[in-house]
Length: 179
Image (cartoon, rainbow, N blue to C red; front, top):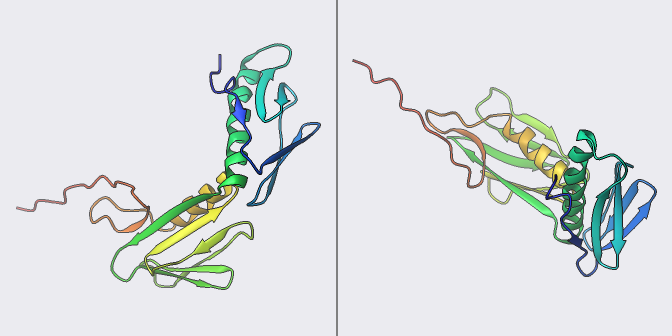
């Protein structure tokens, strides 16, 4: 039984929810998000309270969708109300980032700079040459873009050089001892 699926969600002030069949649209001060939800789960909206209840047979597929739908709607509500942000740090000698229009240019130890196109639904800022801030209203889009940038030069375990999330702890290895 999904405990997250039965959690009741509340709409904060300034956020509206519109249900059209299986499509749900959430609108807030930051923007609008739309997502298609499964017909196996019923969404019950009473005022500012939202609950999810499985329809029909509660088999393993319905059980899997129950908590996922609740979590997805919660992420949509928080996204249009507050937004999401991820900060990346570039660690290494000469590692730097800069914006060139709708492109993020990274110098991270390769012979040529790496260019990454920025999704129009995201906001990318480079406050310092070694810091990248990715923000937007869609949690999945923000996380995917940040993970894609991080995968260009993952932090290596010996010196710790690479692109890492802010606050991420890298397990360091001891090098060769040499005799």
